[in-house]
Length: 107
Image (cartoon, rainbow, N blue to C red; front, side):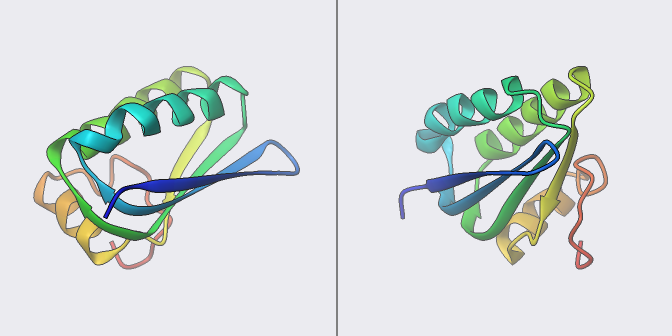
């Protein structure tokens, strides 16, 4: 299933991005641009809702790490909210669950 995403801007500098589908190499370019736009708007907090992500590849994990670095440089808090089992599995397998400041209690 192709990746789709929705960006919601909330009060107090919070941006929420809801992703649906496969976070794979084919979807990384479009998502990278959307995330860059979201981070460049200088939010104080960027929440990634990955509850509807059905799969994630190494390229997708790499993108999440790149977003983390960009957010850190801009003093923006990045958090993964409600990660799907597929996402949690990939983050744990790569030892990255803590690195991405998970808000999901199941990670």
